[in-house]
Length: 157
Image (cartoon, rainbow, N blue to C red; front, side, top):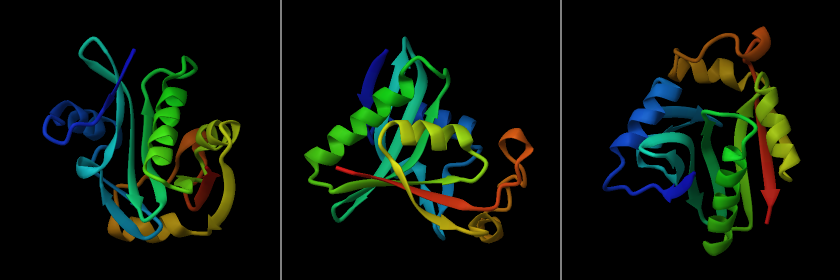
């Protein structure tokens, strides 16, 4: 597995991966829409295939993870990507890393907590509001759980 920083000039494969995983180049979080097609990040490849991707943005001294995808769970892809952005955040002088996940994404909540992230905010019915901007957000997610709320997590570095 090889970790690569996203190169903005050669990102065609990254964009194809994003569209395949998210069905769009845009995500919605905390009332904002983000274009993953211009986001910084890292990806892991095996041969010519991308098997993991993390995107982020930095605003002032705070990094926000926008997306994290792994094609194969429990083999360290997500952990390697998280470690890469932690290293990048430190290099950029960031004081914390934040992210938004949804109430149905119990795997993400467990994953991030095991890596030192803490739940710092709960935005009730935020996804219902986001559907007005992005109607393709499904009504139900993992385990048939209705997707309604945003959960903000944070790692102080």
